[in-house]
Length: 253
Image (cartoon, rainbow, N blue to C red):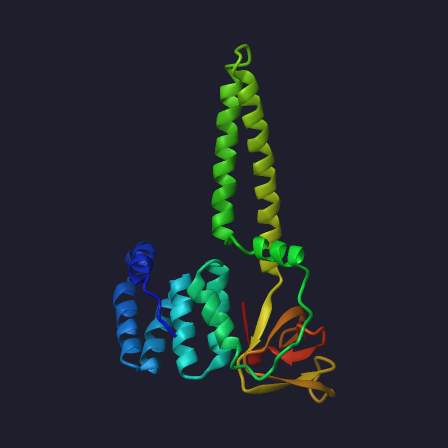
């Protein structure tokens, strides 16, 4: 798998945090990339994890971690970091490719019917912008709407007012649409997903030690979290099966 080439962008983004907390993100990222290129994936992961521990979160960092774990054949953590990278940068072709490629190495496969083209298109559209991009779009459209309202307010008696009124109306609709899209994205991200990080795990019928085993899942399998206790998660797999798993066995995205 190819490592991200956007290191300089990442460094620029993290530099304010670097100065505030005294963490040398630039050195850690460059050192991690050097170790990765040399094939020392353990050392690369150690450097990347230090950045992550200091809240130096970015799509590039999760992508690099996913690549390093994949090369160590630690598929659960590789999938987890690719998924986190996709949430931050949902249109990046390298992230999407490596996520799908990594899933080919998983033991659990789910043969699901393909959705209708319109449903698939709408699903892709919902995830095409990150949360940060949607928030920026909402603010931008709000500013544009206010500008058009002010312009219309001072040009109501002129012939151009019809054009301004139409533009204001369109800007208002786009603002409402982006607001709905933002709410939908926030709601979707609140529905947490789990990835199994251990080789295999028993899925229990209840969040109680010694309860009966319903089925077994294997490393890298993803599931939606339905409920949680202090030490257990209730999960639902892609094929609809549900059960309980110890929370220490999974990573959350």
